[in-house]
Amino acid sequence: MSLDIPDQVRKTVMAEGNGSWLDELPGMVGSLAREWSLTIGAGFAGGHAALVVEVTLADGTPAVLKIGVPGHDVGREAMALRLADGRGCAELLREDMGRQALLLERLGAPMHDVVTDRASRHDLLCEVAVRLWRPVGPDIGLPTGAELAEQYADLLPELWEQAGRPCSPATVADALDCMNRRRLAHDDRSAVLVHGDIHEMNALRASDGSYKLIDPAGLRAEPACDLGTVVRCTPDLGDDLRTRTERLASRTGVDATAIWEWGTVHRVVSGVYACSIGFQPFGDLLLAEADRLTG
Image (cartoon, rainbow, N blue to C red; front, top):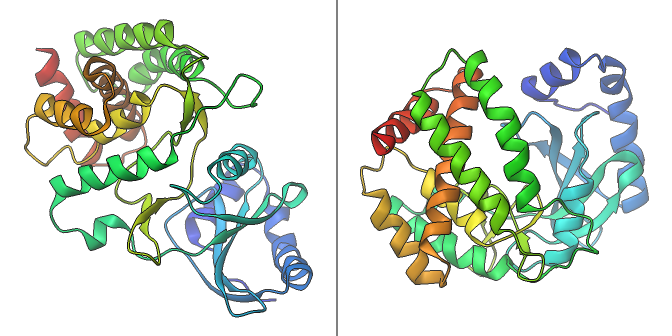
């Protein structure tokens, strides 16, 4: 079988010393196609941690086959999709964890390409987030928002140094303070399933005209963790982020302070990381806003 493997996927696999996986991939896709009665179509570009291709089921239903590259486990994504059960996220049709393969509902264009008014996208992202959130107890094997905050607190100072100190020390200190407060605020009794990275490119049009999310990180956390990414996104919109936060709080009933603090966490971590890998101008836009807000 001939496969069009995106360059970024190929680079990721080769950089991590897993070149033999690329040789095995056509056979793996072929065996999945036979076992699941799939017709393989064109590949999707843009990602780096998975091969993603269009497929068609035996009954003509369009779907997506996703195979995680070595070292990038899709198990958490599969668990989050099972819990979501098609509400707020793409439906999980089949899975094979031995081959790191997911068969998913095929969705349409991303919100970024469909909704021209960028402020309106935030309202739509609120709606899809609310559909996704549902209580999940500590017996569900997903990391918590407290663990994410702790992980970020360990990562940020070193990453900031490696990236050449792209924002002020006060901005880093503010983010670390927010991480600590959100860590302490975690409560298993009120934790819900959250996506972890809600933005306009991760929300795709469903057949009924609504939007569903793809690529969930999968966490047990307070809802504000998701809304913080909405505060982080579109850093060049030019709106007042306090007003944006209050609007998100009003639409969802989630505490504005918690949203603001998660927004600060996501803004600084994402900005520093983007600067460390040269993803510009996104990184500089985020950190310029972070420095302004801290100042």
